Length: 328
Image (cartoon, rainbow, N blue to C red):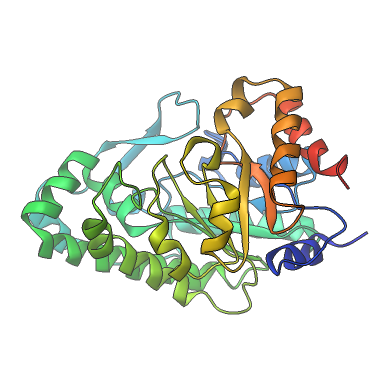
């Protein structure tokens, strides 16, 4: 039997493995506010389902709360926290942001949670750390409506803010890479036609996302890009350096077989995130097996199309896991 690392490396290279890798990830609201609790939740999740990759998902706001934004979980089924107080109220506020110290505040708590997790796993499971693109962080700080208004009326000020957010995130990546992690998961939902035009993402999203990915050292051997939402801008995917591309393939116009032509590595998906929550185990297994057949058992990491709801039944997680086991 191959190790999880060997299985992932062969899959990303398009080579045959003993079976295809499988993963799924979710947030842990409440527990994501304390290092030890988040580590315990991550370890329990991994122990229960034996994923080939553990996505060490912290709170979605962990990169921005120390700018002065107040956030809270209001019961969102995905475990997403909402910013109840904005750090950017006026466009001029973008120019007042300064890079954060990753050794303090929320980033330090996440660092400790990942350290506890990787210490317990002892290199048996590849761990990847989610990083939210600077444009997502900006939306947390100002609110999406204000961000879009500022992009279209005060672009220079927004660029100043994005440069600061990028520098802060680069500092976080440099800190996190010192842990025994496999790599990073860049989450970029604004690379989507439902959010921005191509020109807007090319100006305000892509350069900053690419800078983050280009900064990741070679010791981080497995990195992923997640294009959120249902109409992703795949034209940018090929130049975002990563070993796997992840998107909501069951809910978009781009099938896995088409997506694999855009990247040199693996594609990640195969099962709808909604089906993971409300579907039956039989439906999950059927969708998983269909994805494996579509991809001829090569270059696929079987997964939901994104993070899944905190209400996802354990039986559906098990069914996703069983889809690759029964196909081996």
